Length: 247
Image 1 (cartoon, rainbow, N blue to C red):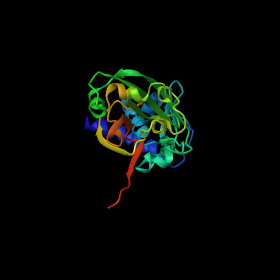
Image 2: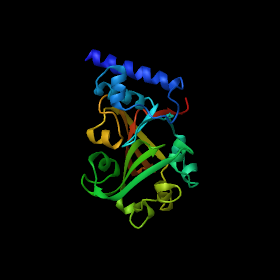
Image 3: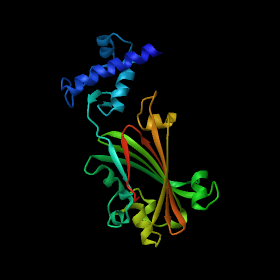
């Protein structure tokens, strides 16, 4: 086991040096797994793990059916509490724009009624299994999937509003809640680091071995009422969390 670990790290280090030196420039296609294995005299499984390391380091990206390419990925700075400031979404800006700015970003959105999971039900003040609205998103930045997020809201606040649409309009969900007199004025976040589930490995295109995610659970309050609970799963290698608060 120790020998295998040393081998894949040796291969990753040598490929990293070729990338950083410019021998493999931005956009260059890396050799195939079999070619890497032959070149460094290792098994294909070792070559696979080496590329997983480079992918986690933000140096390469894989394209199904096309191969692996040198593609530098700058960590996303998730800066709080600025990203959730009412001045931003109240003016129609997106929270994600605060995180990624002009970087190319795509999002897949699925909206529908679901039974309230336990962690969301208790915060929202409904019974476990009661119907709530779910907004599920899968975010990709520069073609790299970086985050999964599911928000849960009471249906009494969402029926007949754009919150039920995939595109919630300027200012997003919080803008639509504000129109109903339920603008969030306080947030809490709980964060844990953990290994991803098998489904998360697939959805985030993570390495099956050694990957880590950050699970962020946020509650949004309007006065004393919790109006939304969101659970986010972040690729830990794609993000840097920054917090600013008074002494």
